[in-house]
Length: 97
Length: 89
Image 1 (cartoon, rainbow over the protein chains, first blue to last red):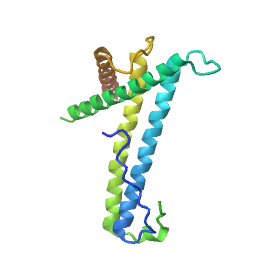
Image 2 (cartoon, rainbow over the protein chains, first blue to last red):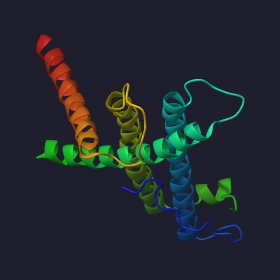
Image 3 (cartoon, helix red, strand yellow):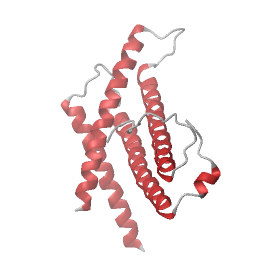
Image 4 (cartoon, one colour):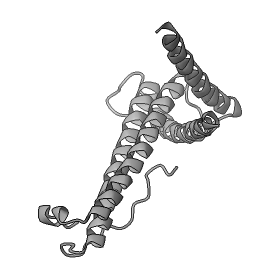
C-alpha cells in the first residue's frame, strides 16, 4: 500500500459538466483528502515519537546531537511503518483463509 | 480545483451515484487499514525502542523481528479477548 496514496494532478479545468467529469473529480478530491489525512497522521506520530526519544531536555536551540537523532528517528519510524504495514496485511490475508 | 455545484451533483445519474458510493466505501476501508497501521506502528515503535537510544536510521534484523512479533502478539491478544468475551455470553 502506498504511504501517501496515489494522487493524480488536480484538474484545473473549468466547472465540470458531464457526469463522467464530475465522477472523476469527486474521486480525485476524495483520494486527495484521504492522502492528506494519512500524511498528517504520519507526521504527527513521527513528531510525537521522535520528540519523546530525541529531545530529552529541551535547550535554547536544538543541538546537533538532537538533530541527528531526529533525522535517524524519522527514517527508522518510516521503515517501521513499512514493516508493520507488510506484516499486518499478511496477517489479514492469513486470517481470511 | 474547481468546485462541483450542488445542481451538478443532484443531476448525477443512478449508476454514477452507485459508482461513487462504491468508491467511497473502498477508500474508507483502505483508510481504516492505514489508520490501524499508524496505531500499531506507534505502539510497537515505542515498545521496541523502549530505553534504547536511536543510533541508526536502519532497522536491525532483531528490531524488525520485534516489530512483527509485537504486531502479531497484539492481534493474538485481541482475538483471545474477543473470543473469551463471546464465550461468556
